[in-house]
Image 1 (tube, rainbow, N blue to C red):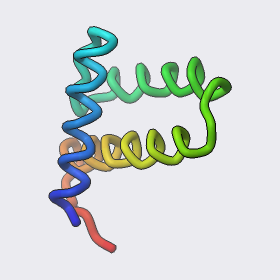
Image 2 (cartoon, helix red, strand yellow):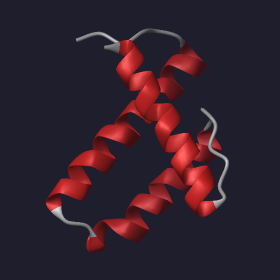
Image 3 (cartoon, rainbow, N blue to C red):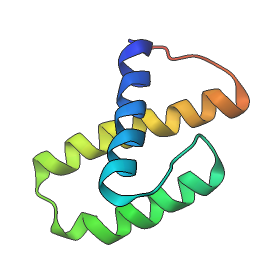
Length: 75
């Protein structure tokens, strides 16, 4: 399970870098940028897009917490 979440987070980093030219890292600035991004795009998304994006961003936020405060993924 943890490998899947880590892979999702890395996919988000790569996708945002390639498509938007923004370099995300597991820090507060990236979390703030993602917050703004969500606000900018959510009105134009359908339910399936929202579900996929929320899972990917959730994995990224979890990796931010683990990177900065420790811990591990658990079900």
